[in-house]
Image (cartoon, rainbow, N blue to C red):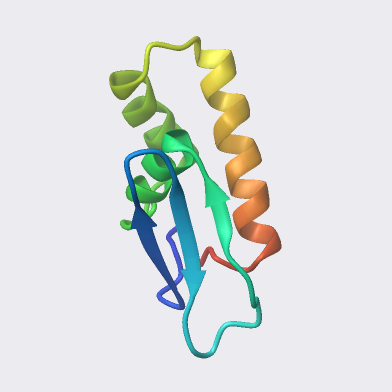
Length: 85
């Protein structure tokens, strides 16, 4: 899976924004924290959930269960706005 080219990513010190560009059916902004930002960074390339999990384990000091839950929630949210291909 990969982030659709119909969305652009903007990250600040405290917040991550995913904004649709022309052609997207979604009109709004997806807001998230640094965790979502890290997941979206992984999704710039074609990756699996397992590859995202490994990248997250290397970056964050959290249990695998928590990271899996965060990844599943993020992917669910991204799928709901058609941000993944």
